[in-house]
Structures are given as C-alpha cells and as structure tokens.
Length: 203
Image 1 (cartoon, rainbow, N blue to C red):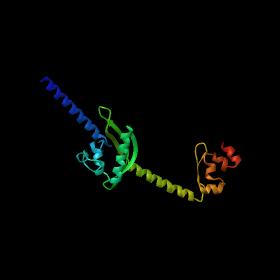
Image 2 (spheres, rainbow, N blue to C red):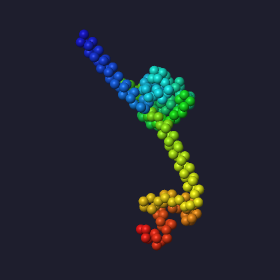
Image 3 (cartoon, rainbow, N blue to C red):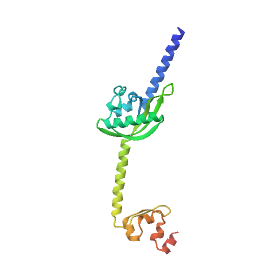
Image 4 (cartoon, helix red, strand yellow):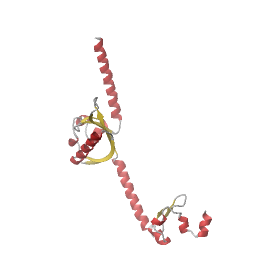
C-alpha cells in the first residue's frame, strides 16, 4: 500500500511539473516546437500554432508537408536533416509560405537525445521577424532615394565627422572642388576646401 501511495504521489508531482512547464512554454511569444526524426510535431506551443493558423491539436502529429507550401516544407526538412547530422544547434533566418502568406523567421534548431545518447529529434524556437524585415527594406529604399536626390543636387553636399574627416561628398562637390569621392573620404576636408590662412585659423 505504501508503494502505491509513493507511485501515486510521484505521478501527481510529475503531472504538476508538466503542467507548469506547459504553462511556461505557452507564455513564450515565440514559436517553440519539438519534432521527431520523421519531421512530425510532437509538441508546439500556442504561439507556434497561431503562426501556422491552426490550433495546437491540429499541429501535433502532423509533418511539415501538410503545414507549409511544398518548397518551404522541403527547405525546413533539409535544415532539420543538417541539424540532426551535425548534432549541434543552428541559428538562421528563413522565409516560409503558410496558407499563401510569406513570413520571415529567426529560427534556432538543435537536436535532442534519448537516454542512449542517440538523436531523437529536433527542438526549435522561431521568432517572427516579418515586420522588422519590412522596416529594414523600407529604410533601405528611403536611403536609396535620399542618396539619389543628394547625387542630383547642383550644390556641393559635404558631411564631416567631429575630426573634420569627410564622410559624404556628392558629384557636385567633385565638380566644384576637383576631387573625387574616393580621393577625399576619410581625409581632413578643411585641408581640401579651405584656403590655407583660413584653414590655419580653424585649427
């Protein structure tokens, strides 16, 4: 009878730990998942299921081919195989298509091992960085447009750092001062454009 009570108490404690762990994993805003050697999901948190547009129950037991577009599923499976073969963690950016929607993720995957030290599957965490990638792309586009406007200015556009070294030098500056951009970048701009007496006064 005492042995039964001990087993029962141990099971209750184990169940409580599992419940706590599940609560912690579900509180994480990033996708957290575990996959077996065949690519089937044995666990995924609520955030991960939402990113797939499904419930947790709809994902567990399902392989990537049924969740992602064919090319995305192929890429995911290939990376899983690399992680398993290397027996070490891998962090990378990926863009995958889910339900006709393309999303970008910063993903870390690592193998997990059974009691005999054999690889039993892959664990992973993925953060949706789609919005950040869009902001970066928008920023690059704006900078490119600004660069184009600066290059088309009829007036010299010069930028110096605190030590008077040239940081920017547009085509108009090349025409006016007679130095190419490559010649002046990093040099003391005042030595190039200020008359010697004025330059001495500015020291």
